[in-house]
Image (cartoon, rainbow, N blue to C red; front, side):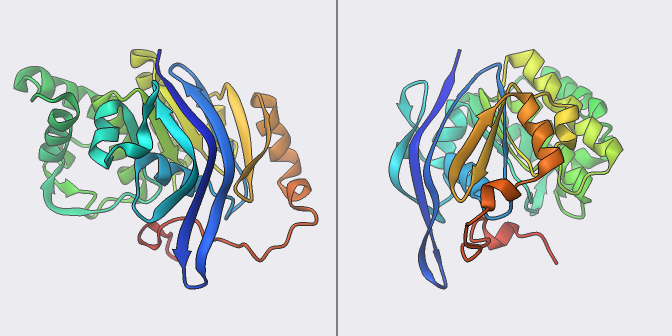
Length: 268
């Protein structure tokens, strides 16, 4: 069993207004085989948490720790975190012109495992994973995310998840921009990966619709950079009915949406 442990995490980001605190003492423990849902309003720090775990240089950790199986994640480079077993499915996957999906996947698998996969078995695995995700085989020869629709980009993220087989996956609003059919397909991919490898999942979402297909063991409500409440799946159902207003009563709205990298910002 692997354990990702986040203790009293404080994170800031530089904005036009200066240094802005985003996370203000977040503590979580995610074990393999568990699914944790992180929910909360815009600007609560959800994406900041995801990118900090992955090692995005925009975010500065000013306090607290992140460990994976007792090893200091914050001391690792981004590639070392991937090799240690961490995976991030981005909310807004970027295009990589000139790099085909086939080359990208094989290069990533080689980097994570430390050796190239056997071509015959690897090709079989890629084809089967793409078939499971209802991806046209022609996508294998296209450049990574170039000209992909939003749903195609998200399927490609889950394709990576299934093939790279990490210990802990952070899924940053994987449901955003997906229609019902694509949501089901992507969710099935996450569930397959979990069943195959005992994957631990940290699922970030605004809404409960993806939780109908990916059942959480734990739900955490993040508000103003802090965990405001924790519970089981029933907490998500309550949030669906009540929203986040009760967490925001008496709070200033001045700390609006400082989280997230503009490079990944959703277009207006």
